[in-house]
Image (cartoon, one colour):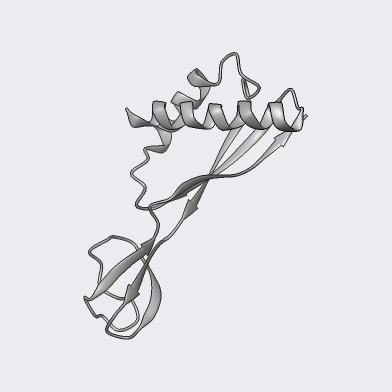
Length: 113
């Protein structure tokens, strides 16, 4: 389950920020997850609760924000949203698409005290 290692990385970021910005507790953490990131949300939520024990984010609410998949269509030269990496262009139906986003996962923000 790579979601556990993702949460360990999140914990490291939170602890670093807590030292840098002198806060003791995170009440809510929002993460953006791209459609193609390969993150299982239920597993991430479980891992978050386990990994954050004893950290400033213990008991924090985890909010996951979905980001769409995006690709550049070389048939119509538009950047479009796609549901699947193999989807045709929703504008022109073309099949020459280069993924441009949707595989990212990042901390958007956090509420601290």
